[in-house]
Image (cartoon, rainbow, N blue to C red):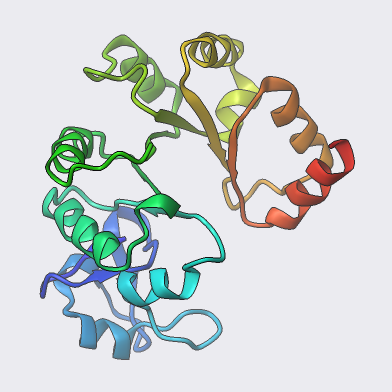
Amino acid sequence: MWLLKDQKVAVLHGEKDGYITTIDKKKDLIENFEYLELKNKVHLPNGDYIPLLEEFLELCKGKLRVNIELKGENIDLLDKVFEIVEKTKMFNFVGFSSFHHAFYDRFLHLKKSYNLKENIIFGFLLWQEDESRRFFDNLPVKFYNNHNSVNFELTLLLKFKWIREKVKEMKKKGVLISIYFPFVLKETYQNARFLSELGVDIAICNDPLVIKKFNSYYD
């Protein structure tokens, strides 16, 4: 989710460093757009327009849980997202995640100010080994026993034994373990078995039917 120039929250991933390519092949930062301009100039691969978070949550209500990835570094985004989630009555069905871990302090503040009792997950996204080491060397305050998750790019778990050992350690302390598949890595039964044996709690993937079929087979 990105906070746009007119304070609207749009649902899109974006390209490298927060850029997006318009239908006339021009690149600009997502945060420089107002929503109507974004809606008219940027289309999804199937031709649909970029939705707002509010209409997206209304579409998902009663059907599935939603991972709200906070993009960019504008902390005000989280305030707007909380307003929308409250308006749509979706706090029981969302979790949050971000590569910009500074969102976490604001998340704790808003959770308290909204007097939320739900066990809402905040996921700390990691995608490089050196970044992972820095994270574990400087864990955020109130990290444990606060319904947090650590969200690894899958190749980190496949390549590095020390990270797999950290996963086991964190699970013993009640931390949820999540992974996300990079676009270049396919969801396979082999990967699904690896995640199951490691005890991964949440898988964010591009082809969830593979994981769903695996789980139904082994359940």
